[in-house]
Length: 196
Image (cartoon, rainbow, N blue to C red; front, side, top):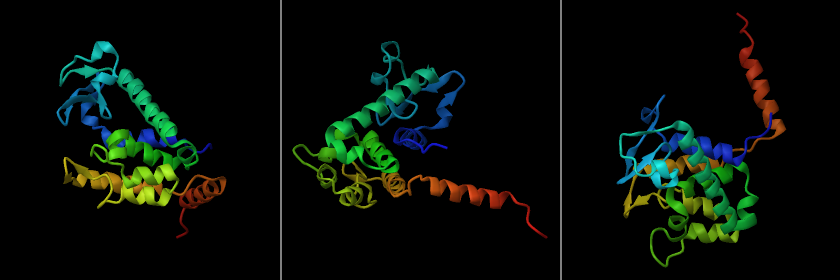
């Protein structure tokens, strides 16, 4: 079994955080209001969809394959921007660390990550990652008190929860053949019938 890629880990994680399955049926994803802007699926703005879907209205549906394609492109763009901005520091992170970083940037945007929403400001998290200080980056980014947990200056419980989950993802022990062997042995023990 091959180890999961950062893209696959991030894709599943972000989709779980950003999507509400009540908006999906066999006709596709229903457009919803996302903080005053129309969005679809895992937080995809209509401006990121093909032209024929950009003027659609809240409540209308967009085919799931169109949304999936736009989501994959947006996530690939996040990954590319992180490689461009942070080079080897980002590229050399483990898959789970990359995935949690992708989730953060997908949620707050590169500019929000860099400035914290304050013009001319550079955040401690951005500086730490730029300098390769991964521990400080994680603390400044994912801490539920001082991380990226505010919207319009107000701490939001939902953002605190997301940062905690991203912090946990960041700290995930990475896949190795040894960890796979341990997991398989554990599964085999669970499958054995108990002796009465």
